[in-house]
Image (cartoon, rainbow, N blue to C red):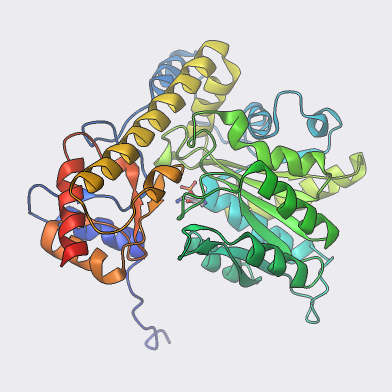
Length: 409
Ligand code: PMP
């Protein structure tokens, strides 16, 4: 029988979006869901994507046939180079296995299923590895890994007093975790805090992971979003590969190509040893997982992104598009901070400009966030995370005044 099924609360982000859409007030501002908006608050189709789509449908070979189980090879191989670099030794040595996934979420899901089934190095007494995620992290991480049958735990990350990374707490957890645990690392533009480790801090983190024999699971959902530089945003991943850490990368093109709903992503497994037999074995197992779950991945978005990555002109347009998005977001960080300073809003707001990527962890309380929504029609998630991409020249003053009112209330 199914009568016992109980109602779950709405997903925090998509629930917020529904409330925003139903809100009849004007003006209203959504700083909830992490999707880029242009300077008029509208969704933005990247010029590189637009051109790639035009080329794609004009191509006489364009059709809607199935892709192979592991996806469009010209896409997954080019995607591996985006994250690992054109000159990656690991790629040259054929130590990288790539499959297509349903965006970043699907990549994390495949990674979870794969690691639950095959990852054997854990020193946990029940044999089930724990995935350590940052506190706080993207909320979906917990349910993705738990539904794959893995255990989850957290490592300290955000220090609310200093508004900085709690590096000591992070490293202590790496040292105290059972050897062979799995550490989920945000490759860049940490969600929700907007705080990334410095290169020096990354070296300490990666060294501790290596010494303790842990496995690194990189979540790369925002490459190109912090500064517009794909290279800088892949620094930690490439350093981990250079240090010969066993690792897996979950890569999303949702944000950096603005292809949110098309579900374009990859899993890349980087092996530490060269072995054709092992490559073939892992790929065969991944293919079985994919075949049983989605049969084969969606083609359209992968074809579009593949065009961009494999065509030098479109590729350079894309890098320009990344600059357009990241520059506008940075400008809005300063605009919001400056408005709050001008209003003499109590507190220090410099963290808004020191954080990177799509989000700012504002340090507003759950109560203040609630009042922002109810009294001012400004929507943020309860943790105080604001999607800076939702700000523009037309609404930033309004948002600052609303924050000022709730802080002074
Ligand atoms: N990881 C992180 C940290 C994210 O913020 C997101 C998107 N919010 C994702 C993964 C996955 O996004 P998608 O499935 O849309 O690629």
